[in-house]
Image (cartoon, rainbow, N blue to C red; front, side, top):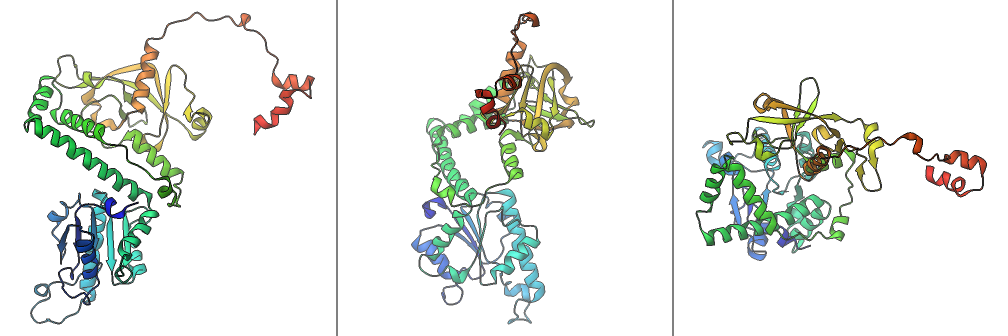
Length: 421
């Protein structure tokens, strides 16, 4: 794993000594020198906390390096206290601001946060934990500056941290691959014409669809199709010794299958919950749900969905292929809303006005799950009726228990204990 390549891009450093020329004054000077001069990382540097408006624009940087304790500027202290040290009140305000920046960064981006400080590291970790920052699940790397100033120590320590957090490793690898594909796609468009959005917008308008959604889908599909599969090193993944628990895996799978915060536009897969606790999903194709289209009547077609209990899920699960036992009249899918599994029943369709159900929408089922549902539903509505086969013509078969009783040494008797296990 190449750490420099993994974190390639512009870094941001917020430290009150970042512009100092005295390497003995603060260790951040040496750290910045290695990043800029030796490793050739372009850095944006701040000696004080940037405004909130600035911070909101730093969501696409490669990393954010923060000092835990930033001394206020002289004009903030006042003329009568030229030599004042950072008092308890100012220190508390400083720590509160650092915590706010950390939380905001983690909430809105994948940017790794490096907190390098001269202060006690365990104390910093405790204060972050007390402020509800989950250090086990977030992309925060906290280290003493004294451990990072030796030659080669900075990237060695970052590498050790990444080894234990596979999420950071894969997220950064994916982000780099995505950025290359994105740049390639937009360069191709620009070389053809810089007015390409006009063509997509006009086509969407003629088709009475939302131009924003159509352009978004067109860009997303083209960028993803140009992404080369990222190389995930098995050895690197195995360095992460933490195995996610059941609830964490449920959350991961649900994130792939279900979108909680979706657009207001009606689409196939929209998932609804009534106050009575009943669930429904829209099976009508998206192209027929578009408001304003000639053939769209503003209605959606709802299938009833039943939330399954843990016992039902266990009984329906087929360990051999990792899916569920489904009859022709339903689909079993999940985890979806609230990390639960649901049976989608095909027997009855309720035709309703979409405007009357917008407030009941709680999310949307995503591909490939929605594709599985629509394909099974298509087979269901096209099924051929067959005459019932009389029970009298079905051959009678002696049950295994009776065979064993009559033949204690038979193969069924020998295998029965094994089969039960």
